[in-house]
Length: 233
Image (cartoon, rainbow, N blue to C red; front, side, top):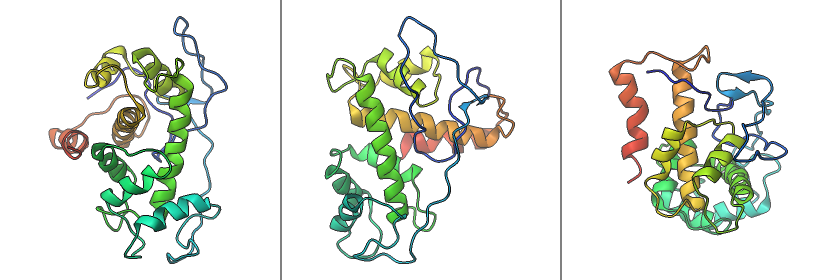
């Protein structure tokens, strides 16, 4: 299965890279990027976060420097004090800082920020990374919602995804936006963006040379795509 255009920055975590200084106009070509692989810019790697060994009222288990508001949002829904939260608890926790996301979006976030020890729940480390990622994507959404309607249209979606490192072909953009009526709100934008990023990262695993093309067996292709089609309804 092959692609013909760059899709994503050279990143392996599901969080967004730093925003470029300004967007480009719809009538002009996107500005050139520096230090590109086939998939786009090479972001500056971040050191791995440190954390304490256990979860507790003082915020143990969270990366150093995590905002008290993030810790509080997690602890408020972790009623059994297990140090893990499920999809419904995550939905409730995000409502305190962002909005009430559709359960389909929540399940997609759970999949992309998967806890390696428990696929049905996430812990403080995953929650902190997810919260930070949503902060980046919220800033992008608000930046490209130029008419402040609370929704973005096809061209705004194109610009927003490009600012995150994705040069999406028009046919793919049309496919992404076709399932939403009257544009994308923030919930839908997160869903679309995470699907694009998640599929791109999975494809890059099959394209170690970052050439933009890869040969996949039928089994590999189905294993790559199916989770993004059926896991969140």
